[in-house]
Image 1 (cartoon, rainbow, N blue to C red):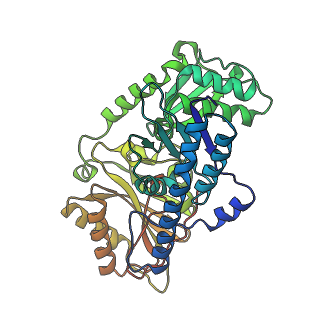
Image 2: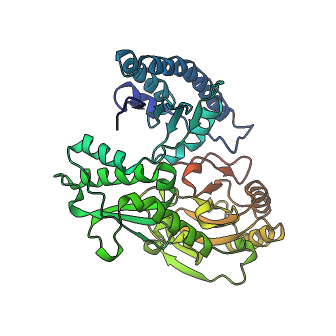
Image 3: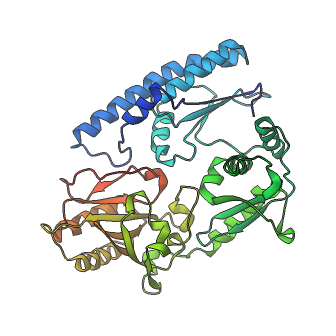
Length: 412
């Protein structure tokens, strides 16, 4: 909703920005390899671009504050969006002036593109001294009245927020349902987009992207219906219940008691993501993080552990020239991880071109060091990597050998 106290912008995805999109480099921000000369050069250039963007953004923000909603502010907004587009055209911004004694806030959002989270963190971390300003990477929740006004501004009618439904799926996330007739537009796709936007604004981006697996339009049972204004409380209660149901100990302390099962590709849909599209069969601990199918493209390890475990996987290219003992490697890796008290193997899979080993670890760096040592001892093929289920680490990876080439990274 456009108001005198809020300004928003989105990078233009046409024209020149399409060229920017094609050239946006994929660099690691968490696992920096001092030997990766090209990647380090690209990262240095990105940091320089970030610093230039801040030099352009700060005067523009001051113009917006000084000129309210006038032509100067509109022009400043365009320039601000252009500055962010130099980093990535999927970034957007929102500025709150901070009336009634509250400090002004600048929100830089990656929206559903969680792969951009490390870039956003780097961008906000390199901000100049902003005095009392507050920087955020999530759009906050708004009141139900603002949700209604947003829909009214967009399509010309007031959204009926009196009826809403929510059910928890097998992965612990929520499927939110609005009545089929709540958004009377001709295009079903547009109606669903409006419904998703309404739910996202009601919950705020962090809660929405972390805990909502789908938004649907359909029948809402009267006995379970509630007002959308109560949706944040319903989600909070569901999250509390779900968290209480998670294991009381890290998974590596429970390996002897956990049940394993074999899933075919259709049953392991949560594992068939952009980086695992060739997966055929998966043997796994029967744990919620492998179940369910998310329509919203995000995965958060902390949804499935009370102990800060992160879920990751090893991806090893099949190679006749570098054949190795798959089962022996996995058994040794499981033993070494348990011995070091840093994690355990929670899955093993085969694909058309790769083999996979899923891990749950409490210390990523130590677990990676153990994994690389075991890989070296078992002469694992050179095209082998540690990669991550978490959407925000979609572009992070570690080669199992110093000479491992960069993997092919495919956006969701």
